[in-house]
Image 1 (cartoon, rainbow, N blue to C red):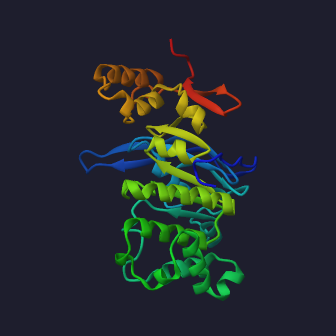
Image 2 (cartoon, helix red, strand yellow; image 1 turned 90 degrees about the vertical axis):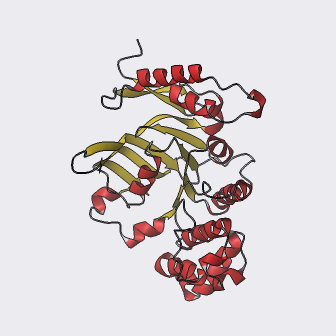
Image 3 (tube, one colour; image 1 turned 180 degrees about the vertical axis):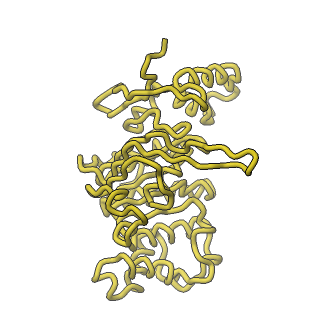
Length: 323
């Protein structure tokens, strides 16, 4: 199945459940140091075999959430439950090898995520040797060749170095490396943002096909609403470290309720609305976002309201109302 056909219905079982996740960073120098709340009590769940898109502008906290789930960042509070295990409780200090096998990350930069001194064979077989099944580990090179075929590359790429590959080919190698661990969950952090437009659709179709063929769950982090609509079963919108709206992608992005989601959609280029950019209207929408969420230094308490149960559409509204 390509990502454009009817999306697979996920099972009710959660591959990932995030509850109340919070993370603060200290930024600035000694004289201007301040704390920035990157995540503010975020809840998120991904069903087995489901693709969930996490969308928002730069600084919204979407990549920080993915890095916390990958255990590359340590949250201050909250729970990360994978396969029924609260990993922040059972693996307090660092993620185990077993966890890193179950949860794999595909990074945004295909040029920086592959070690330039190693051939592609080492990149992929290393993942197989560390996390693969006993059968795969008996002949890791053969398994690596199979994985490259799976992502659209042939076995000849095993003998190449990363600098000999295009950006799209490197990202396919990164996905093959992730698959070598036979993961339950792939965290794809803006995997197409540094690629040519002509290459992006191939990566999106690949992720959709891999979900269908292997049943792997995918958290797709992006700022691109069109690709979220194209690929993901559900979409969650983030702003200033909060999840502000979520639901089935077509329903949510077709009829958003939260003013921030509406603001994001208004910024998407539309050839049918050429010349329709309205700075006055966008300023009004920004003020409406502030009315819902409060200023950054004093955010309002919010509660989730169900918009439509059938499409799992919800929105975060001020707990004390909008009046």
